[in-house]
Length: 439
Image (cartoon, rainbow, N blue to C red; front, side, top):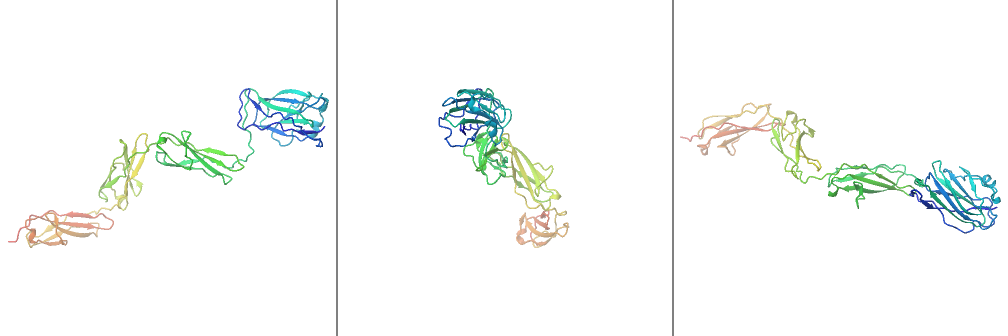
């Protein structure tokens, strides 16, 4: 007898999930002859793989033999993922299918199920005992056979997705997000390295798990609608011949709103050792905004310097000072603003005496300034004479001849001390009595 294969089924969709009593039709009737004369008597066997791993199902098989006396079709079930045929030629040739008397069934691997009835309906329940795919095999003689096959899954049966024939990407990292999570800021998704390269990557941003329309780039600027929500980014990798993979980042903290006003603070005061600087924070909004302060010297935080004022210590000499103001408000992003740095802090001269004036306070008389001892020496000294507090042009020496215009006015002298790396200091004498006119 000549045997051949008849393809009677198609693979179920990999997403198929059947509930109790669900039915999946596997094939329609096909009255065409199975083989033509002259073919080999050794049957070619087709394995039809059911999509997924079923824990229990029944097979319903309807067939019609064209004439009595011919061997009926035979139906087999095979467990496992081997690519070999589930039995050898010697296995099935021992069956006398044409006698209509053999009723042996396969109960596991390599078991054939011949049915002696020339036509009719077969229903058999099968329990899958191992993991892996299930193969349904149909044998038929060379004569025509009108056959159909269906699978009915029993109550409680589910089907796992069919193992893909596509290759698997070897590296599919979870993306990471960077950037401040506040309205108006931009987040960036780092996809990591996918392999084998090249792998096509696409992006999708989501707020609280809901995809944001049009947000399909590697960056995402947080809109006002994102306030209070968590952000994720999904990266999907595609490559021809490989299964598509989607990876989603961990969610961010809830997005905060941005303060509408956060000005840069300004500093005022002498930039010299021993002097006090004051920071002016400006007006933050929307009010009220809680403000805290931190002073730094050459970018290093000064422990305990957390007030609006800062007295410059000796250790600040030669260094630049900044003040940071941090604004906090519930539901808004914490914002930190830093002042522009000062000029390098000067050290203080240790001795800056007040000058004294000697001489007769009368028109055409000469007055002399005694500056005292400035230190640490040497200190460069310059002079400026004043009448009633107004500088006299050109009167910049240690002595001053009182002009006629000085009559009735009081005289002072200012001495300015300069030294590299030190703060310039100016001291002014006590005023004289009013200058007497020349008699």
